[in-house]
Length: 284
Ligand SMILES: [Zn+2]
Image (cartoon, rainbow, N blue to C red; front, side, top):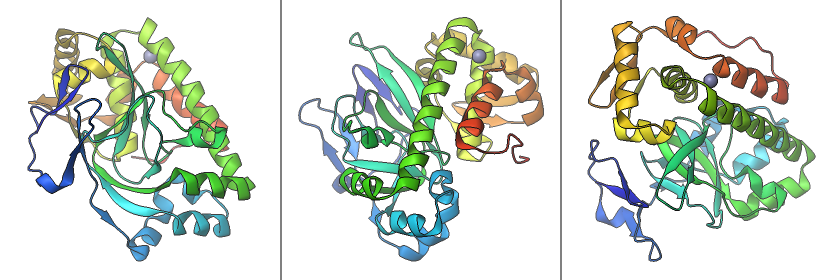
């Protein structure tokens, strides 16, 4: 299964069987999108209440209203949730896995500018009256998420100050983290940036294993493949990770955190301060 975006192909090293009935194509772009297997399961949604931080932090009544408007979906690896300029039909609250925001250039180049996991949501700009995404939202690590229509989200935000404030703070944190990543991309070496990306992905996926191709990592970090090869090889030689045919396993979390540029910790502090959280992070 391959997905082609502006001339580049995702997923060539990670084939998966897909039922044809679950596919549809975008007539304008020719791109193929997975259609989520949806299931309404209120008990399951209730079970996951605390597993998206934005929802978990809401007052009980507001949280219940949000959950009532959500359905649980399974996000598929490399699934495109929204293209740049497309209308945001749904907002997503990841529970497992994470979604990348990718800035796409006219010449086919692309760079990841944000990662959204259970600490956040996709489509938060809807509360600003902006109903399109500036970047591509693509699933980097598969897993469950809660989603609701953007119309329902807009209505809930209009009626509920706590939700509006929480999402507004999250938007602020996201903008501040975006600036941090931009500075990191411009000033720090590939190896340190790869480490930062691995740590951010680990935190959002809540696991130490990922599957990513060199090609995709290069797009994520805005460097050539050879740069990723050298950085990953160096980290492997230091016993921090293993990398084999796109399977990355973190072996030494503490060592990896020491190997990162300080942008990783700064990013966490920005989020914690904006959301009013303690800076003490849970042990992993
Ligand atoms: Zn950095």
